[in-house]
Length: 169
Image 1 (cartoon, rainbow, N blue to C red):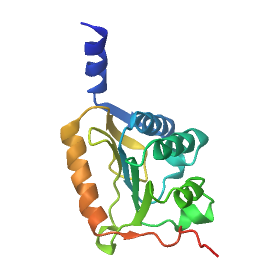
Image 2: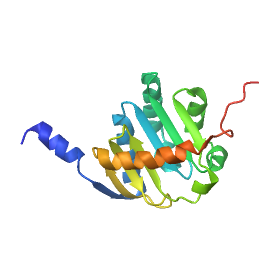
Image 3: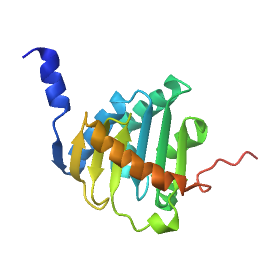
């Protein structure tokens, strides 16, 4: 087996995770491998996964890499993030053409799942945002496509988050 075969086999493995640190590490690895698009759905801009220097630096570099890169965050509410001073919010305010933040429609606000889809091929999925437990795969286009479809269906019914918009006074 060549090194490339081993890497492909490893990237196609389903990773079961349970715990904050492992989930945070996997989310960062997914973001580091992003080429075109990162989509996230959750209750809020998850502070464990996204409010750390490594992730913010990664997202900042990704968003500035090309005018074709896009980050879409779809959450139920940003109120807690604003109150706690989430470090991703200023970046969202500065990079409005690359990072979009929307609020889910009322009919989707009871959804507990949290997931991240990268480039329609990679994903991280938690059945409940209350627990950092789930699955991740670095190459599973079929599962990533299903999650992306669920994301797009909710995105199409969502509205831009007005609470995080910067006021130009």
